[in-house]
Image 1: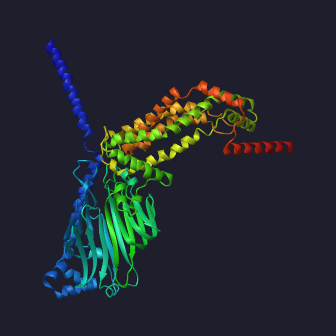
Image 2: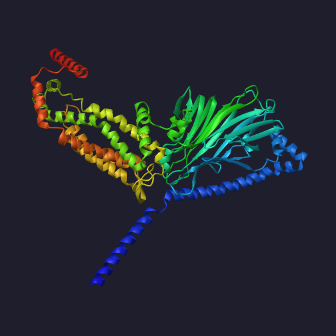
Image 3: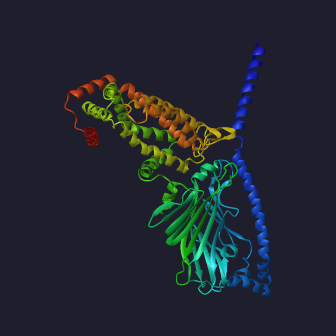
Length: 635
């Protein structure tokens, strides 16, 4: 008998272990969207490599032959198409070579052809998810190019991206200095100079010319063309795309963005930086001397997020480069790095404003309260616990306002029978009913607006949180409980189909937040929907509140399903704490009998002096009543 019992327990145990293993395997299976993106990316790499190899072989037939043999016939042919810049094709650098400069944070690969960066890798960050083994690359596989349209004095239009630059790599102390020269002669050239300092995301970038005042047409500026197709780096392409856009600084420090439509264009004057901002990573071009003008364009590439999984937006910038005394001399910088508020702020170049923290008071709350407080907490405890403690502190700070709001609701609740009695007494005269109701409020010492004002004070903090959490770079790839990335959705079940406006997955934190807000609204609706009697001709607030009790949680469930888990966690804890505070206040601080006694006592005193709002409202009502009486008399 004992043996049978042992066998049965063993079978149950093995079955449970098997079920757990199956669940773990299911939870750890690769994300289909990420797998599709990786597959598409590999195919693109292969195609780009083949195209580049073919193109390089074609160009090399002419240029390398000249460099190796000095064939004057071929040189003459090159001069017909390249003019003075045919000299660049005679140099040993006229081939598909690259030069790499790197520090602890970034690795940059610069091509001889075009002289611009063809790969920019961030060495501290992984794409998609932690442990993927794939580093974030802002530039790779021809997704970006930099070109200057060279208008020559003999009426040619050449593109610098098609010509070969001569690289020279040196060191200046700990700094790496790479000079890329497009030569029209031994001492005549267009130079791109890159200076990379240790442990920096910022790269100094200078464009200058020497001896080209007779080679180039200097009558008008040359167009600098900068294009970049933003590569997807995170789990949700639609969520990442939502926060991918062009930002720029112009007109003496004013920072703005081009918009988030399908295709957006902007014309600037006096621009000091142009940022191709992605959700958590950005490529920024800064200049010490403002660009006189610039044209920017952003095009959305995610039409269907089930198919368009590799890129988010196509960015383009056209910036005229003016001549000074017949030569180019522009000192600029590139930033390749995280869209992290503190990192960007440390550069003291105003580029932290590319992070959308909200306008006016919402931005102030984020900059001076949320960011410092959360930064302090997260430096000592894990990010998930930091969100919980952060939420508790914010709610404790708001608790006096919450208390005042609930106290006002309790007073209004005590006055309900008398308000209903006035409603019945003056049901045929709405204006008189309003006047008598206001007199009752004044005698009782109750302000009907007192319950609304505290709620309005809390609104900026709620809106600020909707800006703060999606922009918090520090949450990226930080796990908490079942969420493996607090900056993205906390998927617990992958659906085999798409639900419109919801997605193909189920996130748990939004469900918990929706349940919490349902119970919060259920608890407060009874006090709110009868704060004042329904007015004639006005919507029935009681019915609206009943609808909102169910509609609000459903809306939140759909809205938050694709949002970052950090925001959903904050809202869940926030509503949970608010429910707790309500229970404590109602149980220990609000005594309906005591409030009723106080109101009756107030009625016996001299009426309290009306506030400006109440007095103005009373005057308006009296004027309306007088006008109504006059109209009746005339009839």
